[in-house]
Structure formats: C-alpha cells, structure tokens
Image 1 (spheres, rainbow, N blue to C red):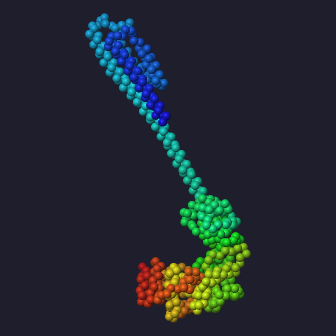
Image 2: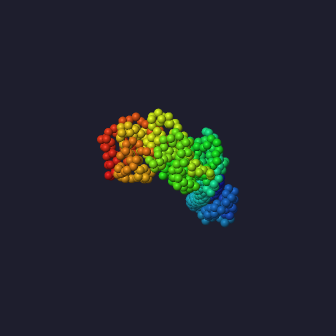
Image 3: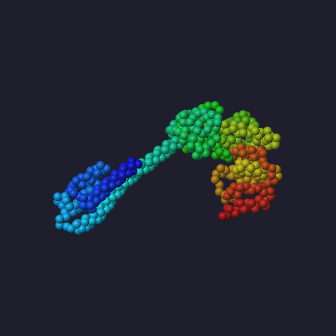
Length: 507
C-alpha cells in the first residue's frame, strides 16, 4: 500500500513539473512572437530555474535534470533572432522577413517542445515500469519464501504428528512386566477412559486413544477393575476392555489360555501351552501336563463328586478316547503364579457346569442325560454355523434317532480317525471311509456316539436342548456359500448333494 501511495505522489510531482515547463515555454514563445524580448536570455539562468523546479517537486531530480539539459537546446535556438547585446537583430533583415523567420522558429520550437515533452514522459514511464518490475520481483521472492516456509513447516509438523501418533498406538513400554490396576466406572465414554489410562501410566496419550477407538470402531467398553500393562498396545487394551473387568480388584494374572469353541481335548492340550495374552508367548504348562490331568481317574472322581449334575453321566473310560471330552467349556482362562494344571482344568469344568445349570431341569424332564445332550451338541457345533441352522440340524438328528436311522455325520468319523480339527479338503471329506470300525461310526451304528467329540459352544447346547420342530431328515451345505439345504426325503436330498456338492467338486 505504501508503494502505491509513493508512486502516486511522484506522478503528481512530475505533473507539476511539466506544467511549470509549459508555462515558461508559453512566455518565451509569446515574447518572441511580439518582439518584446529586450534583454539577452541567459540560457544558464533558464537551466537553473528548471533545475530548481525539479528539485522542489522531485528530490531525486536526476532524470528531470537530464531532461532539462536536452530541453535547453530548443530554448537556446529560440534566441537566434536576438542580437549579442540582447536586442532584436533587424538591421540587415526586413521587417516582414524577420517576422516570417520568427514564425518559422516558433513552429520548430513548438514541435521540438512536443517531442521533448514526449521523450520526458517516455522516460518517466520507463522509470515507473522498472520500479514496478523491481517491486513485483521483490514481492514474488517474498511470496515464494513464505510459501516455501509454510510447506516445510507443514511437512515437519505432519512428520512429528505421525511419529507421535504411531508411538502412542504402540506399547508405552514394551519391556515392562508390571501390572497396573485401573477402575473404569460404569457409563464411562472412550474419552474419559483414555484419560484414566493416561493418568494411570498405561498409555501415552488419551487423545490418541479417543480418536483411535473411533477410527477402529471400538465401543461398548465394560466397567470394572482391570489389570493392564504398559507393554500392551491399544488393540490389546481395547480387547480387554470389551471383555469386561471384575467387580473387585484382583491379583494380576501371568497370562491367559484360550479354548476355542469346537476344540477337541487334543487341540486344548496345545492351547494351554500358549499365552493368549501376548503374541508368541508361552505358558509354564505343557501338553503332556494337561493330558495327564484329564486322564487321571482320581482327579476325575474328585470332580464328579464336586459337580455331580454335570459329570454324573460321564461315559466309561473304555468306551471313549477321553472321558472329559466335551465337558471343558470353551472360554478364556487366566492363570497366576501358583495356578496348577489341575486348577486350570477344574476352572474349565466349573465354567461348563455354570452354563449348563440353566438346562439341568429341562434335560432331566426330557428323559435324556447331560452326556446325551453334550454328545449331540458336539455334532451340531461342527455341522452348523448359525443359531437357526443349528436348531434345524438338531431337529434332523432327533428325527433320525426317533426313527432308528443312523446320524450319518462325517464329524464323528473324522474324530474316530483322529483327524477332527485338522484341515480337510472337500474331496477328502466326500470320500471319507464310512465303514471304519469304531463306536463313533454313526453310519454303521444307530443312535449317539458314546461321548462328545469336541467342546460345544453355548449356542450349540441351546439348539440341542431346544431344537426346531421340523420334518427334515436330511441336510447338506453348499460347499461354496455355506448355505444349508434341508429335505424330507432321500430323493430331494440326493438332488441337493449333486447340485451343491458333487457338481462343484468336479469343477
């Protein structure tokens, strides 16, 4: 803004200078035309006058002085008709001729004056353009500097923000082994939970925790007491918060054992060796420790006496692979410094008893045993994946049992072969040996197997206790989509098998 005001002042000064020059030129021309010049015109005096005017209105004065020097030439020529003594030289020239010469000189001077004025204006314009160019160049450099500074600042800020967020997502102290007990009040939001965790020294930033949980859609965190570690990342912490805390503070566990739904005892023996609370971490237990306990008759007798409703109908040892197969509830179990293998197995039995307690009366009223229900539920667990399918599949099995038809489930055959839980191809499953000699062969034997083949989920148990009411005797699942198709007669079932299984095996 200041540059534009200064330029405006310069333009007004230059206009005043041009006006003064025009005024002097007019007076000189008038004097020549009327032959009224009586004294010698001092060229240097005129030059000084013009320079003084320039200095008055234009302190720079350099360009104006130069223009005045050039302008002086036609003023000097304007005195050609004046004698040395300052009087008009008319002694040798007739009056008419002198007047004609004066007119000619006036026209020439007028043209020269116009040309000089134009040159002066051109110089002033050139000077102004150069100043504008310098100003624009300087402004461009300043703008480029500012833009570069802003970009560099943004990049640096983004880098440090990324580093900060990344470090906040990772464990606060990956080498820490200590536990910190935190209390999450009921109704706490993610933002408040983050503040509690940051204040407790579990995480680095409550703000990052709040935005990270929103980004990952973590919600429905449970209230209670938690034993958390600075060595846990945000995902591990959120997982525990979703599982729920304890009503009262508890001693921190050393780790966790995860028993997945549908696991066999063989698979559980491997699970007890892995600490589910930490990636690639192990527990102090071995598979042999676990298998030794679940086959210990003394231990089983003690458990039967303690949980009679659950274990009162256990199958005999000589009829099954493992007597406790299917009686260990699939869940996550914590262990502590003095937790023994027997403590862990009993915890699994106790949890199953706790969930089954709601069904004991219904099972007794139906004339079935707990072993019957858990045995059938172990098949339902593997054959169906949704609650509705499991209720329908349980109905199919009951319909077949009631009509003295074999269950014809490959799940039981795979268990008899020792392959249940292993990955089986579609072709291998379709060509399974249904003539195998085993009490678990439900193709050649009618009714139920002697005992469960895996650890059924609560969903499978519920479906078995309360099955759907149907007239279905057959079912088959589409090997591509998993959708289950049911039929009441063998012809329809055969068509479904051809359409949803055999045709896709041959592709």
